[in-house]
Image (cartoon, rainbow, N blue to C red):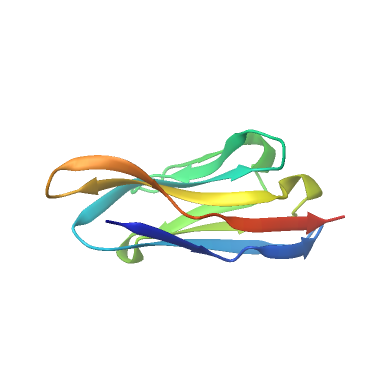
Amino acid sequence: QVQLVESGGGLVQAGGSLRLSCAASGSGFSINVMGWSRRAPGKQHDLVAAITSGGSTNYADSVKGRFTISRDNAKNTVYLQMNSLKPEDTAVYYCHADIRYYSPGYSVTTWGQGTQVTVSS
């Protein structure tokens, strides 16, 4: 079973930067879409950014121009570079990946454990 392990969260001042990483471990699978979502206290779970295996990206309007998602397919790793951070970016950030297992052949969306990002004003 594939596991997603996240790293890179922490505390940063407004205007600062953080880089999140998420690596998928295991064997016998391929990954189509990888992405990041976040849940702020008292708010719904929102998609932040996603990237396909071919490199096509999608961003929430609130992070366009500030966040950049990228991936290393050879390492099954997705990154989220977050610049010009704002207090409203404070949330738990979750990595997710659409995993396709070769045998048996099925697909499932897998989630990481979450990493806290706190932006102080």
